[in-house]
Image (cartoon, rainbow, N blue to C red; front, side, top):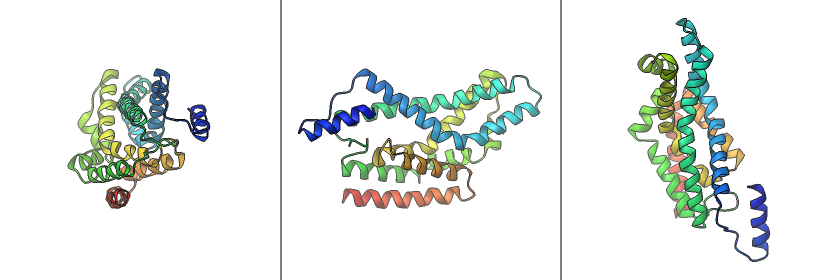
Length: 222
C-alpha cells in the first residue's frame, strides 16, 4: 500500500490521475489492515474482561481455562473482523468515488463534517449508553451472560464484542476523517476508547467527545 501511495504521488506530479481502480489484492490487504488495526486498538480495553473471564473460570475449577479464554477472545475478534470487512468495503467505495486523499482521509469537507456530526450524535443515543454500561461492568456482564464450555466461551466473547462494537463503531469511523493510516490518531482514539471503558470519568469523556465532534463537523461543512 505504501508503494502504491508513492506511485500515486509520482503520477500526480506528472499530471496523471492517481485514482487507479483497486484490484482484489488491494481490497484484501485493506481488509487485513483494518482487522489488525481494530484488534490492536480494542485489545487494551478488552483485556480486563479477558483477565476476569480467565480468573472466573479458574475459580470455578473448570478445565481448559487457557483454551476457553482463547476461544472467548476469538469470539470477540470475530465481531471486529466483520466490522473490518465493512470498513474495507467503505474505503474501497470512497476510493472509487475519488473521495480519499493520499493519506486515506476524506477529501470532501462535507463528508468529513457529516461523519463527525453523525459520530457525535450517536454518542447521545440509548444504544451507545447501554453498550458502554456493559463494557464498563465486566463482572456484571459475566454474571448475566455466563455460558459453560468452549462453545459457550465463544458465544460470550462474541456477545461482548457486539456490545463493544455498539460502543465504539462510530469512533472508528472518525478514522476516515483524520486518516486511516494516521498512527497518531489511531493511538489517540485507542486512548479515548480505553478511558471511556475503564476510566472513572468514562461517561463524561463520551459527552466531551460529542461536543468536539459536532462543533468540528459543523465547522468543516460551513
